[in-house]
Length: 346
Image 1 (spheres, rainbow, N blue to C red):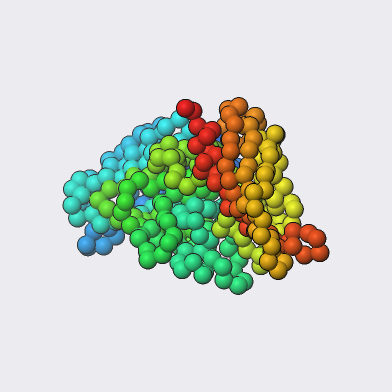
Image 2 (cartoon, rainbow, N blue to C red; image 1 turned 120 degrees about the vertical axis):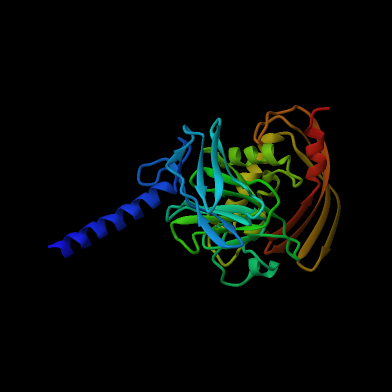
């Protein structure tokens, strides 16, 4: 009888400890902009830890959300301050330690749904040498799920930034310049794991129902992009040109008029009086090269900002391959930077 009672009590203690540990290691963020998982529009941050030369130390945070603000806990001989600051529809999450001189790394995880996809971090489709993004038979298509991406300087032409967007309606920006990595449901199908070196950790979590709003929020915090606006790359889809797939990740056909029509409609609406003047043309074999000048007046609102009513004039180069009297392939290079400058306030 005593033996059974002992084992029963032991089992309860083990279960209670596991439940308490799980409860203590969670931060819950609620937003109406998030797509629901099991009916809940929340992000759950768990598996929080820091590392020193002596190893990993889990952070025992009691249930924390934006209404609490911050909490102090003791772990591994350190006073750990975990802070969640709401910023309109967004959040800033920080981890700090006292002392912090021996802290080498911080880590956490964000819950993930089975159908959730991710994009960002780099302009390539697959992390690593450029050829991997064009390899035959790859299935990636601007979806980082199933990839682990290191945030370090690499001997490639690729540009890395610690910022990603989720199809659930949120984005993450890790502030700072310490190396780290993002694990998109690789080691745990139900979580995105984030680990970064440094004495402290600071990240912004943006929420919005429109992905463009997530990009704008990031631009405000990180500064204006040095690349042209996203719409300038719309007809080419840039790094998402994988002809081994029938459609892009969002269902758009890889080839054919349907892939180009959205850009044409947007640009024609923005410049209804657009004129394209051919200055020179050269034909060789089944290809034709054209140098042209584009003129028009910005009267539509489809470029992402209100019509300026300003005239524009910029140049471009086009190469097309012709088969049976039809254009079957093309390459375009237009001076959109000049056009953009002409639309800016004087």
